[in-house]
Image 1 (cartoon, helix red, strand yellow):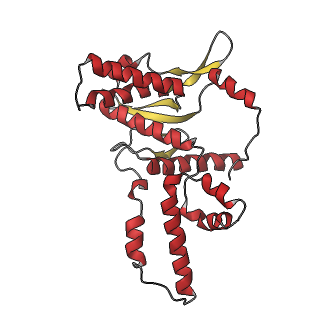
Image 2 (tube, helix red, strand yellow):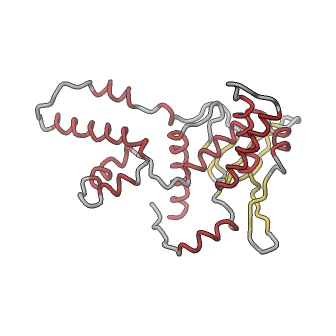
Amino acid sequence: MEKATIVKDAAELVQAALSPAPSAAFSLFRVGEDGERYEFPVRIQLLRAEDTQEALQKAQEVAQKRKEAGDYKDIYTEEQAVQLISRALVRDEQGEREDGSRYWRRVFVNADHLRKAFTEVEIAYCLNLYEVTKAKYAILRRFDPAELDEYAKRLSDQMLGPYFLAQLDSTQWPQLLLSLAQRVRDLSETLSLEQTDSPNSSESESETSDSGTTGSTGSPNGSLRDDKSVTIPDGHLVDKDEAAAIAAKIRAKASDDDDK
């Protein structure tokens, strides 16, 4: 069940500078030297514009310091990930400033601390956690084929149709149009209406199916804190569609908990 939007005064936007950024709870897992598997409760918080710009600037400085030049951008790209995660990965506890405002305590003091503590695989995995967190708090809607009838109903409204379409991520428009076209074709066949030649449904479905939303394989390095069945892939960097699918599971879990 989608929560209702709460209207607040615009002046409160300024107060966000002193309040904790939105975050999501995860569990990281590590196998110790004794062979035991240990769980570490952490959070991934969204970075504000200031933090993101600072991370990019630091990455540039590191690349220049290590004399990366020309078309080679490997050091810069990897350092971007280090700088981002060192800021986004926080403890599952808040600290308090002198003025009484709260903030999430960082796990690592700085990027050097993270670089020495985490392997390349663990840093890449935390990037996936950050992508999922962004998808969880995304303002734009993601297209869900299961809601096709609802999309058709709202888009057919002459007054509100354009407004509803604007709420949908534009990268999802092609999939929405294809789904609507397939629905129209199916209805035409059911009603025995004449139609022009077109690829058969199996070909269309195979071309438009999204392989990026499949579940992870193997043993994950972490999972959603409150539901270990929601795992994050660790063998590759997730794209926006895969992150959105995982975030949808997280939101569904939160909604189920609210209804209980």
